Image (cartoon, rainbow, N blue to C red; front, top):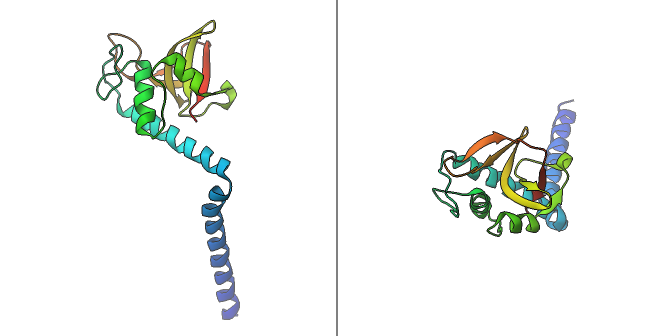
Length: 156
């Protein structure tokens, strides 16, 4: 009976080791999976960086580390997370993978638009909120998305 118990424990340990090895090896064998995981990790880090800049003053044309405009905050945050973004809101929109609102995740970019022209960007924080640098006279803050005229983009 003691042998059976020990054997069962060893089998469970062996299964756990095999599962751990598979979890480590599969991303290397399936590059698309690794890339998706890397993008998710970068997005989470960028979101954290943006949140850490809470209270930093808005300054047109600024891209950190202490003052930001909207695209400067997203550029700075993703750069700190190891991802490159272009400088302007429009160029950032064009460089992302466009996704449906139903697919948005924390760390995705939220682009505010009028017609076909984007004019503002923030980082989606979940629960309908974004971290952004709003406008002159304000500071980086978490705010509820105030309009339905938004598009979403995922940094690759």
